[in-house]
Each structure stands twice: as C-alpha cells, then as structure tokens.
Length: 88
Image 1 (tube, helix red, strand yellow):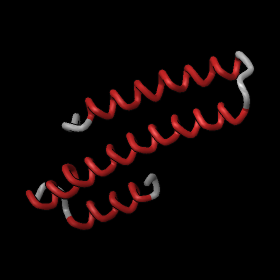
Image 2 (image 1 turned 90 degrees about the vertical axis):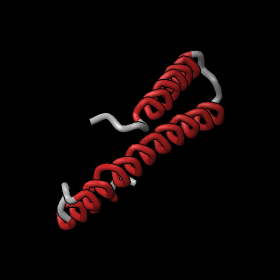
Image 3 (image 1 turned 120 degrees about the horizontal axis):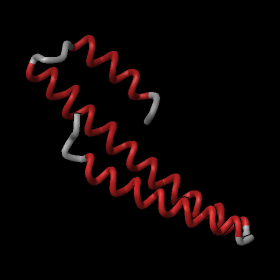
C-alpha cells in the first residue's frame, strides 16, 4: 500500500543513496577519516529520518485510522505497534 508520504520518503532515500556513493568515492580517494565519519553520520541521519517518517505515517494511517474505522482490531494494532517500536 502506498502512503501519501512515500514519494517524499523515496526522495530522501535517493538523496541518501547519492550521498553514500559520494562517501564511497571519498574513501577510495583516501580522504581523512574525520571527514568520512562526518559524512557517514549525515547519511545515517538521513536514513533514520526516512525510517521514522515511514513508521509514523504507518502508525497514523494504517493503525490509527484502521482502529478508528474498525478495520483493524485494537489487539492487532497494539501488537503491530510493539513490533514497530523496536525499529524507532
């Protein structure tokens, strides 16, 4: 199922992908480790933000709306929330 946030998440991940390719090139060219660590932190942060947006969107629309509309049982929503919480 595609959510309204998916296009933005895809853009974020594509930017992170490009940034990661840049970091690989930096390693291959022998750039200083401090610069590499700094850039890897930026890639990691971008991926973390994309993941968080995806999970929050899922909780709001799939779980929250599903419970509100009666298409998802409370117990099932709680179980899925517990599963999702380990990825936050």
